[in-house]
Image: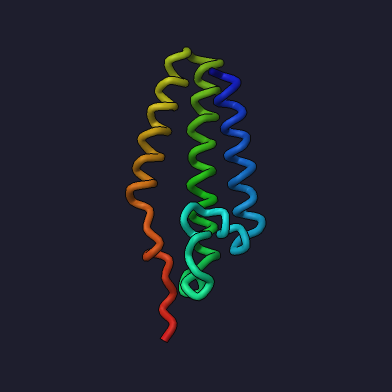
Length: 107
């Protein structure tokens, strides 16, 4: 379980760095955003969208990394708690994430 947490946290850090490096070009990787037509995509602030999504993925990786370090230095229970926190945070993100927040007012 420790190896899974470490690999997942590294993968999430790598994916979040893709969002930070490629900025607005990485917004195509966001779930659901790819299926919006190109005309609709022009109405969104892709830079802010990519930054926020990269930050979300970074937080996911950080939760898992802290859980893995807790597993090594404290107890196995720390990793289980980290997985529960991660699941709650992922569900909260999925439920509350809205593209409307990133619309640009073009008049």
